[in-house]
Amino acid sequence: MTEDRGFPGRWVGGTALILGPLLLLTGTLLRAPFPFFFPHQIAAATAHPVLMTAAYSAFLAGNVLMGPAVVTLARNIGLRRPAWAAWGGTLVVVGLFERTFHAGIDHAAFTVVRHRGPEAATGFVTDLYQDLHLFSFLSFTIMFGWYVLAIGAYLSGALGRIRSIALATMGLLPLGVLKGTEIVSIIGTTGLVVALLPAGVRLLRGGPRPSRKAILLTGPAVLGLAALGYVSTLG
Image (cartoon, rainbow, N blue to C red; front, side, top):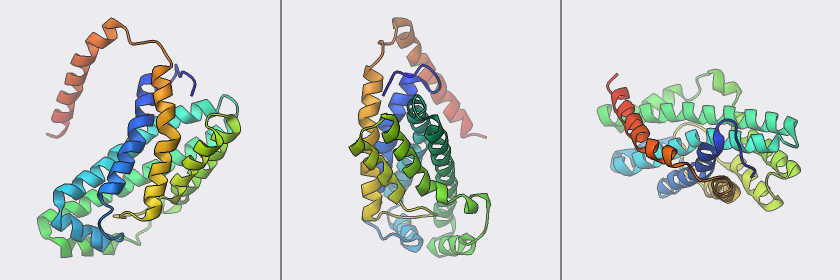
């Protein structure tokens, strides 16, 4: 992975390449003890609210971090294979948007569990499950995009053969509202860690160390972002 001076940059891109896959794997493993389909996920959220909230929150955070991670990888693919980078990157990012959309519905269902009970939440999800929306026509991107990106990563030399195959296993990850964990879920998220974590480490270590000024500014910047995060919860 070459040093990236454009968006999202070495520090954001490298960190996302590491944390994004790890958080997706963590969320996948946390909900592994419970059956796959949504009535069972709702039952699990009723019996184990903290665990299931942690599982779905970790998965969502990882999914969001995969945005800059995929952009970073696509920029490297684009150095030699721009068409593969454009198609693979676009398809995967659209798929990430769709998983975030699904996560919003997951959160709404868990909120109904807390306020109205599991029966109401199950009825809520059952009623909306077949409703058409924009992402109904783009569900193929969630799986298909990873295959295109993996081929581009291999052809461009951005990733080797083994890690490109590992990246392609993300196409096995099931999609939809309140989906639990199957063996292919673990294979896909583990493959993502194998594919991208070494690239993130190499990217972070491959450039100059941050300046003293940048280090000194990091603390106030983090505190400012934390304050903005708190204020955001008040609106």
